[in-house]
Amino acid sequence: MSELIYLGIGSNIGDRETNIFSSIAALDVREEVVVVRTASIYETDPLYNLDQPKFLNTVVEIKTDLDPEVMLQVCQGVELMLGRPINHQKNDPRVIDIDILAYETKSIDLNNLKIPHPDLIARKFVLVPW
Image (cartoon, rainbow, N blue to C red):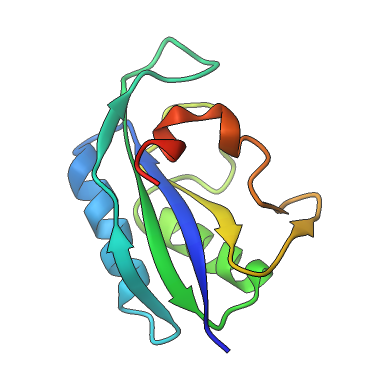
């Protein structure tokens, strides 16, 4: 059964807006993923590692039947396709970053995936567009 999920998408390298729209398009072409709506894009200062360019960020609402672990693989595949290295450092500049923020009916606490996203309430760039 399909449920709504929310993704946070950000970019601070290259053509940031194109990177974001390309990631949304790459998700939307998948049969099991339907983009319902996309929030406005916001420019924000970086967190933690401040010596890097500003980010563009948005939140995307999606309908999917995919389990969270599979959806994580889909998101990571899109990141890789758009040029984000597999072995990247946390909080470094990035071409694209796709985070699963929340699932409509699921909570998860794994080493590599936590839903809802643990930093959700600390990030205005997620809450404002959401």
